[in-house]
Length: 459
Image 1 (cartoon, rainbow, N blue to C red):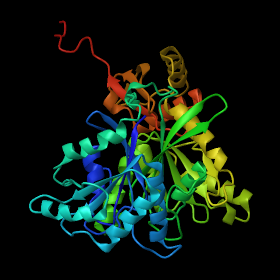
Image 2 (cartoon, helix red, strand yellow):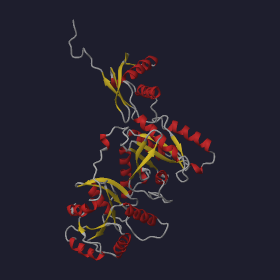
Image 3 (cartoon, helix red, strand yellow):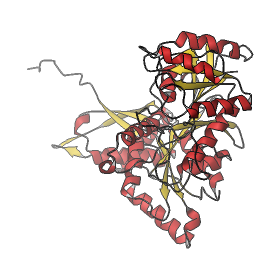
Image 4 (spheres, helix red, strand yellow):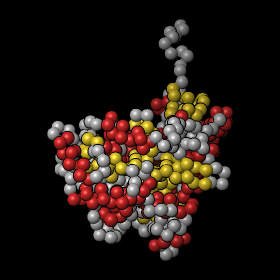
C-alpha cells in the first residue's frame, strides 16, 4: 500500500514547488502570489524505493465561515486526516510566524504523524531552519524545493513512516489492454467557467471533494480523482479530471489563468473521454463549440453535458432544440450523446457514466478487414469516386491500422487527388455501417505503386 503524504503549510511557503519536485513534473501551478493552490491534488510517485501518494493542499489561513478561504481550509484539514504523514513546510528565510505556530498547535492537537520541513534553505537560508525547533515538532529537515537540495534527508525522514505500509508495485496504465479491469478510464470534465464542473464531480463522488461556489474561476489546477463505477457487467476504475474553466483567448490576460488554460489542454490530451459541460440556459456558446472541436481534433471521444437542467421550464422543447443545434453545429461528431442533468440536485447524473463508457467502447472499436472491404465495394459501387482530369480514381483496399480513435487506411491510385468531399462520404459510411458514433474517425490514403513506373516504353 502506498504511503499517503500531505504537504501542508501557510500560503506561499513552497508546497506546490515541493510537490512538483517530488513528482518529477510540473503538475501543480506555481506563482509568486499566495493562494494559487485551492483544491487538493493527488499524484502517485516513486521516491527512492518508496511508493508515495502526494497530496498538494491549499495554504492554511484564518478565514470567516462560508468564505472561499474557509472552504479551502476545510479541504486541507480533510487531507491531513486522510494522510499517513504530513510534511509541515515553513519558510526558513521568512522565519517562524504566528500563523506557523497556530498550525503547529493544530497538528499537535490532531495527533497525526508530522515531518517538519524547513524550505528555502539555499544560500544562507539554512540558518533560519534552526528557528523551527521552537515549534516543538522535532528536528526540521532543511531543503530547497526549487533547487532540489535536501531530498535525501527528506527521504530518510519518511522511511520510518513507510515501514508499516505494504509496498506493492503497481502496473503501468500503458501496459494494460483498454478493457482490462485494472486500467482506469480517464475522463476530463471541461467547459466554460461556472458551468458546474466541480459540482458535478462532487455529486458523482457523493462528497465535497472539490471547492465549489458562486464565484467563477474557483478551480485553477487540473485535479484528478480516482473513483469506481459499478456497471451491470463490470466495475470500472475511473480517473476523473476536474479542470479550470476555459474562457475566450482574448479575455485570458492574467499569467496564472494562462497557466490554468495550458493545464486544462494537457488534461484533454491525456484523457480518453472528454465531457463538455454546457449551461442549459445558454447552450452552444462559441467557447463551448471551440472546446468540443479541440477535443475532437485531439482524437478524444466526447459527451455533451447540458447542466443546470433544473432551471429549464419546458424541458421537452429545450431538449429538441439542443439536439438540433448539436447536429447542426457539431457535424464532426454525429450522434454525440447529450446528457441533460442538474449537478446541483443530482437529477440524471446517473446517466452520464453509461454514455461515457458507450463512446469509450466506440473509441476502441475494431472492424474486420474482410467486413471493411465488403463495405468498400458496395460503397464505391453506389457512389463511385469522381473522375479527375478525365481519369477515374480507383479505391482497391481498406484496412484498420489503429484504434483510439479508429484509424483506417485506404489504398488507391492518385490518392492526393481524391476530393475531401469523397473522404467525408467514406468516413460517414464507416460510421453508419459499423455504428461508430461520437468519436473522431481518421482516414488515411496510401498511393498504390505503379508496376510500370520507371520502365522504358516498348517500341
